[in-house]
Length: 136
Image 1: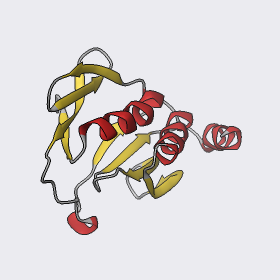
Image 2: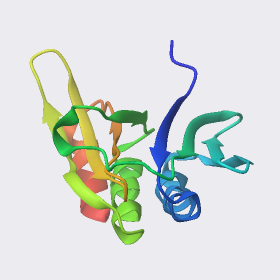
Image 3: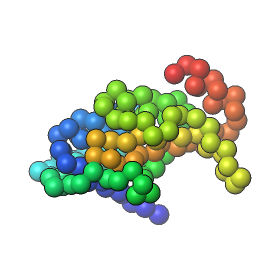
């Protein structure tokens, strides 16, 4: 349904370094580098960062976020840890989030410009999730 997404960043080089580290656990790597944009993906750019020199930081209450699919809870854990190690902030630690219609395991981070990024997976059972968390 969605082919690709992009977020604005105020410092392209800083953001590229941040996202290189943060997206690696999800299997995404830098595929395209242009003057004012960088594209990350597996086989084609699915996630873009675009330079907006006069960018106002994204407001926390904007409600906007982008969610990226992870293959496992271990990838979600690694995504969250990588983002924190790269200077991002946590906006929701990795964990199981049971809801009335769907059960999922996710983590939320905020980049240097206020962009809220989530990694999510849909585990088949709690023992798999708990086993993965214990190793992280």
